[in-house]
Length: 128
Image (tube, rainbow, N blue to C red):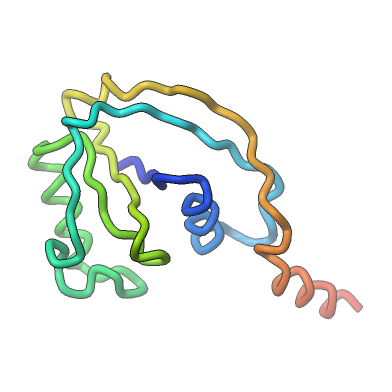
């Protein structure tokens, strides 16, 4: 499954909570285009109980596995656990229409070090 954020700021937040430490200097941002008719959107009510628990529970994995296996859509828009009003897009590379995903651009993105400020200050304290 290809995990995508629907905007740059959500992508930065997702990277922040999932990335290894220390601060990742430069990352790449890929902008892709996907046919609108190949995406379905689910709401929080459509997701299994505990979908937003950390760590993710088996019900979330089963939900995702079933969606991938069904090949019912190329993409599925789901609420972000981090920012519930935002959406992440999951893409199924095994879907027949994956060939319709088009790379629009690829460019480096430098993350603002303030996203990692607490950890950086903690590391400085340890080095003293």
